[in-house]
Length: 67
Image 1 (cartoon, rainbow, N blue to C red):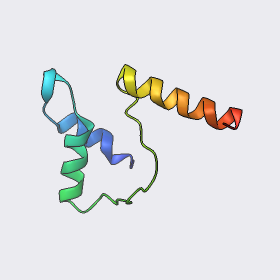
Image 2: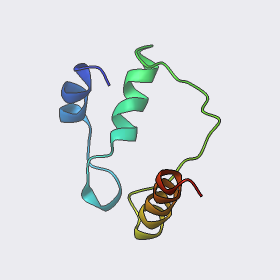
Image 3: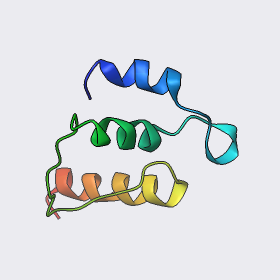
């Protein structure tokens, strides 16, 4: 993220649940041509949920154990 994200977040209206959404700020920066993207071909876990966090933990535990 570029430092400008913080200024953009300050100007962003709260979204779902009355919270600031970083995706809204990123969308604003993208419209200004200030966002780059990379297509990722790998494992992805949503660590913002208990289920996703447990899945990520188990995945990395198995990697470290070599199984």
